Image (cartoon, rainbow over all chains, first blue to last red; front, side, top):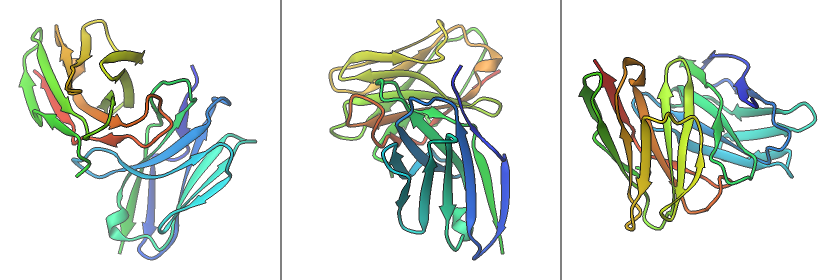
Length: 112
Length: 114
């Protein structure tokens, strides 16, 4: 069936560098996307969302880019910090009333 | 703290048993979602309730059921448990009827079936 998937299962970056986490989706009807961060032992935490009528949205140190042509979503984290180490999930919703469909996650490891 | 409360935090039970997981959504949130997270499957959507009514079902087994009560808390019932049911079970809540809004997750219930 339709799915959301992540390009890389793990990503290691040095503290202070920028991180880019990628996500591909296959459902062209998806019109809402969210990035979640999950730290060990905790539930997923909202980072940023974007609707399909936008191609970029910025938050505090984070930017989400949406390329609907190639069905690709990315999360950019500026000046990555040790506290950013976590698993990052992209999730989509088609607006049909169903809940979010999550990808499998990318583990981000920030090294000093 | 997301405002979503799940109990218990940990649960160990034997195969064939039945357990009930409980979720209290954020104040004012009408939607409750249940997800299962296992190592090899990631976060899988199970079921969605809105204001007491079932709205959508995902990959939920027939052995599993849920309900949302008038006070909006929800329970997920897992019966005839199997080893493969061991996972983290998350509840999330949002104010909206559909999924196009931020959902807040609880800390999860870790179920271990032995």
